[in-house]
Image 1 (cartoon, rainbow, N blue to C red):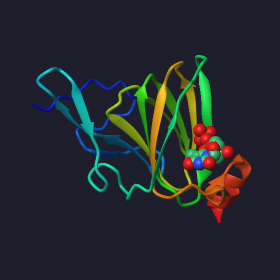
Image 2: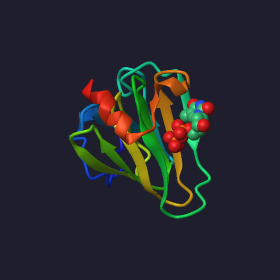
Image 3: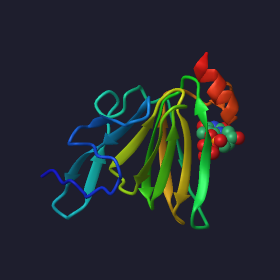
Amino acid sequence: MVAMPESKMNASCDGEIVSPLKVKNGKLIRLTNIMTSDGCILSIGESQAHIPFEIKRFYYIYNFMNQGMIRGGHAHKSFEQVFFCLMGSLVFHLDDGTIQQDVEVNSPDRGVYVGPELWHDMIRIAKGSIIFVVASHAYSETDYIRDYQQFLAYIKK
Ligand code: TYD
């Protein structure tokens, strides 16, 4: 049986596995859910079907000890990532240099795809949240743009 846990994101997946956001290179990801006979839910993602790249790396961000913490504050030149909030909630503030969009994530079967040249801040992270990220490349600081003015200059090039 396929279960569809209620998602309270302020943008809708419209039943699609991958749905565009208003910002350029931003997408919502809806994992496939299977509810087992004991009431557990398996949320499943595969490269290509759910994750629009081959996964080369993953990392977690956790130990949020205070309510309302923030992370992010950068864009990538070419890396792609999908962020899941396995526990808790947060708001993604996305900015493509022209359009800004806030997306709340509070369901573990929903992800936010952040493609190249998309500034992202994770704000209002709830205490105890666990953020799980899959990435298209191994870590390299050279792919980061950590200064907002440099980001605006970079995307104009
Ligand atoms: P950063 O990407 O800035 O974290 P966030 O987006 O949560 O603010 O990374 C924080 C630090 O960790 C920075 O010094 C780079 C390092 N880091 C790695 O060494 N490898 C990785 O895969 C990641 C994501 C970060």
